[in-house]
Image (cartoon, rainbow, N blue to C red; front, top):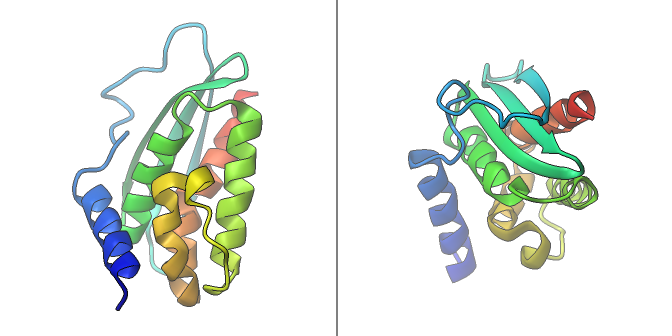
Length: 150
């Protein structure tokens, strides 16, 4: 196993243990923001997430979520929360497409740590099709919540 794989594994473990953005009720959406939410379930394994996204104009003001599932799905939601914070809508959509492309790549993906930050740690997950849905769960919820908030 390479040092990069070890680093990526540690990032996923850290985010699954100390998730960012967990707790929809713990932090109401900022006043005056457009709010969208989405509940997604992975029928393959039963992982589920409810994600709320708040828009302040064209900027993502807040992402909060609750969910239960494997460490990959919970870590992915945490990483997404950190990445999307204060990002503009176009930037988030570009990151979403890059993440989805990475998940479809089956580990044949040029790394884009600059764009995806810690989300690049999920590149190795693309080798395991059953786990791709786990990693994508929060991202799909965010895409739907963004459409609802707009």
